[in-house]
Length: 297
Ligand SMILES: [Mg+2]
Image 1 (tube, rainbow, N blue to C red):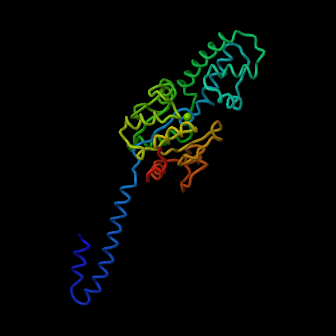
Image 2: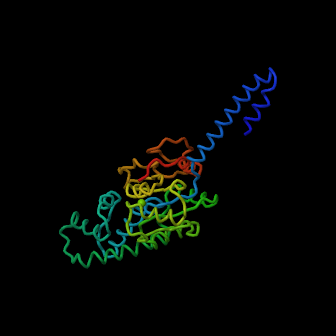
Image 3: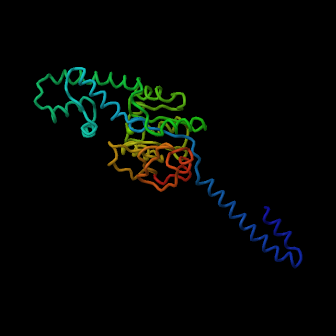
């Protein structure tokens, strides 16, 4: 190797003897540099894909979508109910739209004299139609920084994927309105896997479809269940929380922000030790992905 031949050349004569030690020290440094580079190649990872949850991550679909759709459904059948952001936050504890309406009636309108078994399905169907209209009209906006980051990834050849348990038509409607479905290599939605989040199945499915290892990807989520699903698939996760998830446990996250930020509207760091200009871009994504994830299950 180069170190040996230089040491040999320096071994000639008295001056060469001193030179021999100098070359030798340099050679040891070269050895250390080679060792460091090899070590880095073994542990460092290159960012190859960004994987996004949809509801709450791409857009605040609960606050700006489902809640508004419920209110429009109530107005359609002349019910004078309005679910405020606060009330809806409480109702989110109840899974399922029909169950949510029934819980609200029991809590806030227990004296309502109606045939609930016919009223609730009628309201729920009207709500579903209003939600689809909200998506297709573009009234549900993307969260701050989402479009900028996805466009940057697309332009720079970083793969994109979706991992959501919401229905495929709803996910597609949002993406078609604000982004481009063709930018995404995989759009995994709905019942494509048997077990929904917090099970890791949807993320394992996406990784398998993209033929990438967890170390090469970065996930964006907004909730504890989503974070747990991604973490259990061995993925590093950035959480952008919001009012409905801000009190959840995000200790497994690599970084927790209030949103992805923009140059003129910077994010707030909730958890994480980063030195950044205040908005999430690919450079920051690459830094987070650089070393092997610590959390695996
Ligand atoms: Mg979500």
